[in-house]
Image 1: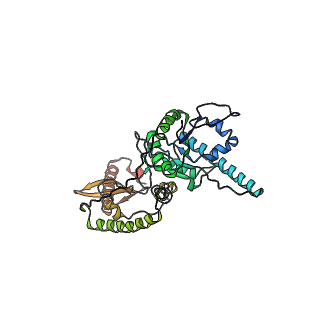
Image 2: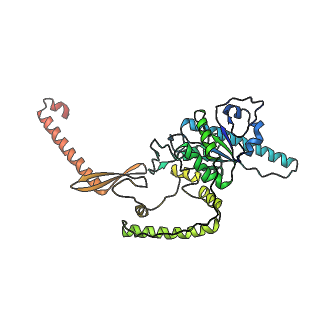
Image 3: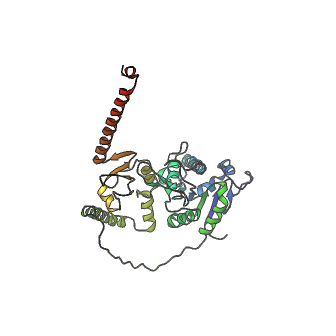
Length: 367
C-alpha cells in the first residue's frame, strides 16, 4: 500500500524465521517471535509512535482486565521495558563517546474501549460509577508487578464499544491529532484477523478537512425542574467554570493543545486520574447540592453511586441509601427498625413464658 499510515499488529498468529525476521507494514507478528528477538528489532521498536492496546471484555476488578487482556498488557509492558533499557544503553554509549545525545521518546500506549456493548458495565463499588475497560488496562499497566509504565506514557480511550469504534476513536481522538503515524496494534490471536481488517480500513480512509470557519449560535432555554438552592449551586459552579475555561483557552491554542489538556490534566480523561478515581484515591468530588442539579434524585439511583431503596411506613417513604460500601439509614428508618425489634422481642418473650408454663420440664430449663 502507498498509504502513509503504517499499521503493525502484534499477536500469536503467523510464524516466521527469527533469524531472518523482517517486519513490514501490514504484517501480523507472532508474539513469541518478537519477544524472543527484541534486541535485533531495536531500531523498529524505537521507531513506533504509539501502541494501541485493545480491550476485550468486562474487567475482573478496577485493576484487572480479563485474563486474555492481561496477556496483551504483559506483552506491552515487556516491550516498553525493553525499549527503555535500549534507550538507556544508547544514552550511556553516547555519553561515553562524547557524542551529542539524541532525544529518546518512548511510544505512547493507548488503552482502548469503554465497554462491551452486549454486557453490563462493571460498577465500581465505592462510587457506583461504570469502570471503563480501558481504565482497568491502564491501571494494570501503571501498577504492573514487573514493568510498571510511567503515567505520561499511558492514555485511556473511553468512547468505543466495539473493535470498529476502537479504531475510529483511536484515530480521531488520538493519532490524527498528535501526528502519530507508526502504530503497533496489540490483541490476541483469536481477535487479530478481524482487528487487522478493521484497522486497515479505518486508518486508510481519507480524512475530511475544511478551511471554512465555523459559525456558532447558542440558544438559552428557561431554567425549570430545579430547586432554588440547587439552581444557585449550579450557577455558582458554572460561573467558576466559565472563568477556568477562559484561562484554558488562552493557554491551549491548538487542537493538539486541547488534546494534551484532556489526556494529561482532565479528571475524566487522563488515564492516571481515571485509575485514581476507580481506586477511590481521587478528590472528594462535587457536593450533594450540586449533584442534585445534575439529576441526582432522592427517589431513584443517581450519579454519585447511591443506590436508593424505599420503605413505606404509614404512607411516608423513608430512605435507605447504600453509599461508599455501607448502608446509611435515615433517622426515621432507625426509629422504625428499633420499634419493630422491641415489638418482636416482647412477642418472643411472651411466647417463651407460655411455653415454660405448659412445659413439664420447666424446672430443668429454668435452672
